[in-house]
Structure formats: C-alpha cells, structure tokens
Length: 125
Image (cartoon, rainbow, N blue to C red; front, top):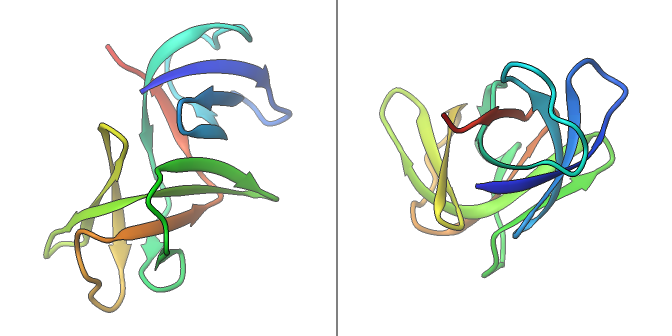
C-alpha cells in the first residue's frame, strides 16, 4: 500500500501516515526511519493477538478504511479468510493484512473492523 509519512510520533520509531483509505499510526519496522513527506510502498502487520467478536467485529460498511480512535488504530475491510490455526486475512482495498486470532467462528466475506493498539509498518522490498 502506498503511504505518505506525516510525522514522527513520541514512541520509538512511531510514524503517522496517510493512505488512500485514511490515516493511521504504527511502528516503523524497516531500517532507518524515513522523514515526514516520504512516499513509500508499505505492508502492515498486526503483531497482537486479535480476539474475534471483541477486537474483530462485523460492521455495516462498504468502504475500506484506516483511522485512529484514541489509542487504537481501526482497520475496516473484508474478512477474506480465517484458517484452522487462527491465521486471518483482512482485505484492505487491494492489500491483504495477515493477523492471528482466537474466538468463536465468524462469517467470511463480510465487512469487519479490527481495533488494535499495535500496527507494524514495513517497507515493501
């Protein structure tokens, strides 16, 4: 996903960014920290374990999105798949974001929101 770095945050390697689907905040995981204004191809990772029906919930939406709500980053997209081992895939526009989850089964193919305090941002190599 193409992102534009907006600013550095107060935590180590924290970056605020804008993308076509909204604005977010994450921890930069690649080499040196880019300067604000840099336009980069990036991948996202959700390092925290996501709980279905708590952190991952169905929503009435038809638009992908990234937004910040207090200390949380909220990703809105289509729940592509959840494998038997708990590996899940969220479609955020043309991108797939992988995450690990636990909890009761959920219907696939619908719009969902994932709320997380941790979002890792990596450069596409």
